[in-house]
Length: 304
Image (cartoon, one colour):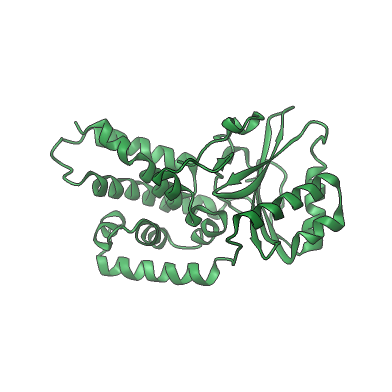
């Protein structure tokens, strides 16, 4: 039986790989559970390089899950967005924390990765994000190393061409998000418009479970009025508004203690203006954020 300590040593990295391939916390945790069961059953001398072996195992599980999920996502009601990860503050400096919260886990990039084929996405995540050699990537997706190299190259070009430009400065991003939140809560339409790029795009993921826009809302005026309409559905005397990190960048969480509803907003910011808002309302995608329903920073789920 393979040792549990070895698996746990690599868990953070495996979690990061799985989430980037699937964009789903549930699928990530299921894949790691499956990998752990297989690892337990493995003879001690089978994996001479545990890191590489586990990386291939988890990547293959996630690749298979992503392939089967594509059909379901094609019939999904409205835009499909990733399941969000929350942190209430900067993570303490651990190498796995830094890996977990770099730009490659941001909503904007994950949304672009959704447009790739499962093989392209897996190749890009493993090689370009985690520096896995092509020979190992080939084992995960069942292709030759040369084919995987071409997959990664196509994915890289598409990411370069389609990923939105964004502000790198964290302070500027946070100030813009806070200004947006203040304007929404205060009902100040003029101030709200000042935070939005004229071509801003709002995507809502309700999954057919709650009321949400089924097509993207485009343009500052329409987005501003849509944001005001959405927040009017909450009781302002009871709802709590948190500025928390959403997938590694400042975002907003609305919590209604009365019924436990949670809404998570991720933002793309460029030059002091919001160019993209991704709003996750589907309760199935927020079930893992039970801690967000409390008003304490320690309740947030860390991306690990």
